[in-house]
Length: 370
Ligand code: FNR
Image (cartoon, rainbow, N blue to C red; front, top):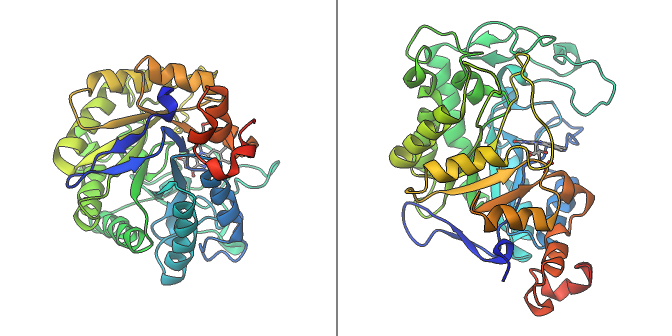
């Protein structure tokens, strides 16, 4: 059996963990389709996510989901702070389960990169004005997180506690909606990353300064979420393992953080992405360009009960198989290749020689490049 189709368990603090039918994970991908601006997942989300489950993926990660209204990247994003949102998530999760996939939700706060217009090609970058449904954003410190964005307001210590509580509330709702795993969004220049990186965290109180200070916010979020999230369910995190700049957030700091989150807060899954804070970084984008970051974390953290997934331009089944067979990661997260072909996993199974009776969605085997 190819590595990609060898089952995988995401460990949990108690119990057997979460069994996945294979190692192909859907990366979280915002859809920016909610025109009512109420953060409630729609039929679009059901078909978008449902097609990946029917297409054979082992775990489907739902897009960056705001833990409060101002946490959304855009007014068109999904949230998880109301009953109506929770019930709509539950409908999606039920369908994913019916197709044999496990369901994860990415809990997110966009911080100073919230309230933007990512769905409009050609739209000038920038913050959506209040008059157009936007809001004043928050971050680690006062000021714009990136050039062209409006100035964010630095969170006070009391406000940080409110955001931590919002993550915990969303985790409680994620459990009620039936999710099997949570992925905290600590990557791509959003709020948690804004605290982690010295590029954007110049605070002088206990939430800034050295690594201990800059990691305090994410450690508090993980602790608060782990407290309400059932012990038999895995807690994961997506990180930007590097800012791609000297003297900024890097792989060594990432390894120290993940070890601490694993030891102290039961984090058992890390999805390894990169970048998101600009700063003039040059990113060597190309096939599998972030895999070496995952490989380094896999190597340094091999003694932990931790699943490392690699992501970023992993498009070809044989490429995914090579990453796993050479021990660079335990799983792969697939984004755009799955948008192009939602049945990427079933199709990969055929191409890697899995017998027809064993492909992930056997009742629909004719979808699998057969
Ligand atoms: C993304 N990405 C992303 N990342 C994330 O952490 N949360 C999110 O909600 C989104 N949203 C999103 C929307 C769309 C349309 C795309 C294409 C991407 C990034 C994504 O998860 C992934 O890391 C990258 O796309 C790189 O992987 P691929 O696409 O090269 O496989």
